Figure 1 (cartoon, rainbow, N blue to C red):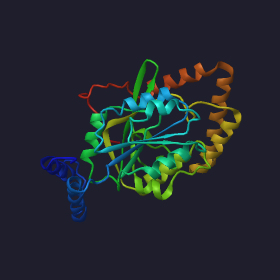
Figure 2 (spheres, helix red, strand yellow):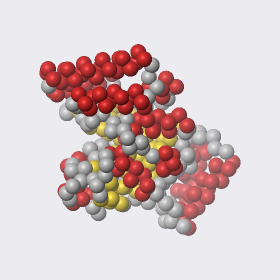
Figure 3 (cartoon, rainbow, N blue to C red):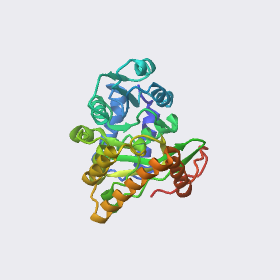
Figure 4 (tube, rainbow, N blue to C red):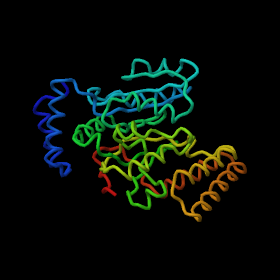
Length: 316
């Protein structure tokens, strides 16, 4: 049994009134049906968290530690391990709902594997090195929104972590302009219906922008609800934020132009910024890139206060 009957009635009431979701009569009946199934038929979990890893056991352990207090009757955890050794498996096996081991052709191939095995109504990608801000609060969010999981996107702010400090990055407003240029909420704090991912999947011809391209389509076609909390924490670094070889930067530029609806001037600006960042790396080293990034985030976003009683910002 997932909830007692009093708790189920409370969830139903919150869905109708507390969250102001304006459900139709048919949607209200569907909510009652779903909650009833929790008691009688062992209905699948509400959410699947998919984590991919490859030869990085320390980062995987860091991520899985944040899952320790998850309610497994609500949330399943899936690890897709493409490692060429068993170091990650020793860390993760037995600590998650499903552990999938096998070589893959890249991170988006691994993410598609995870989607295929997902049994939840919605999917959250929390890759190795990322973590949940608070598992207990996250489960409360899932419970409160059980009526709309599977047909609505839920998204929130996220925390960007640097050495010695963290900042709370506000989810950008979902304007047509932001959708056009791919300025989207972080995937570490975005729950997208599993049916969308299973129907479309990530384009594995991308190395960098497949998630941006697919999530842009998701936000353009599915209703979304902002959650005024922090769901995910994201550590600085990685392929999306760190300059690579000239060949990788050229690929980054081509993929961005393909995935986003950029004007000619925006493409020129992107090209100039990528070249400038690469030249700074060659002249001053990675430490200077990191310092500039830290300064920019400190200037643009508030330092993160993990106190749960702190006032949350208003929805965008």
